Image (tube, rainbow, N blue to C red; front, side, top):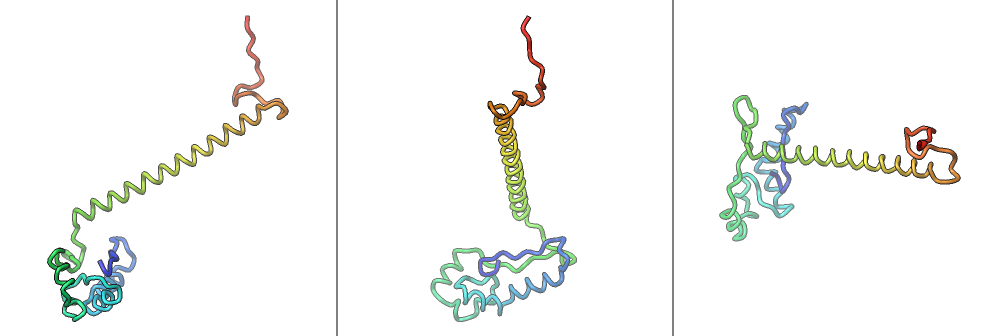
Length: 145
């Protein structure tokens, strides 16, 4: 996290090296000091706390109450270490997106069906021509015996 903004590199990004350099730049001690001074937030890297701007009583209390910042983690070959909480959150957001998509689809279908019912009802009103009362009923009349 940088100044309240989460940074991530997707596994299938086209420019992994450039993305990694950008994250390294944004999480460098110098950039963290500059950003966090400007936005009055706390650095995510320990080295930035050496700046006098972060030597206040308020910062000291906050540092004690929050877990210490951690550098970006990577495993063998520079691949990111998977945190189960991240996977859980990713799946949660993916599920929410899928539900939202299906709700929008159902809403569109409902609107379309309502429009079809209205059109059929309008066609059955007197003065609108000789339309069948219900779609598919044709022009046959039922006769009682």
